[in-house]
Length: 141
Image (tube, rainbow, N blue to C red):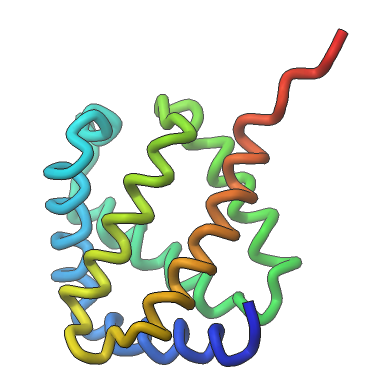
């Protein structure tokens, strides 16, 4: 992820912030429609609060892309907590796809092919770090 990608991500996310509540609703509606198996993770959640947490977490990550040494431990801790909710490694793919579709819907023409590629690259990097933390390979005996 280079400086241009980081700028594309940060600039596009700045356009999402004013519509963050609607973006969170779009995200969860898309996620539950395309990956209904994840819906039980949210059975006891207040979805308005969950949406606020999602957008706040995205904000921290997006704003921290130039200082990954601070973002990575937070992401790893978050991944470990998600294991307790029953999250599986493959769920990260569903979340990533819903995130991209949400950005596409929310940003419209501002979600250019370069911006899309930057987001996919960043999400892939972060989700890999999170999965590696939450689901380490079994130690050989």
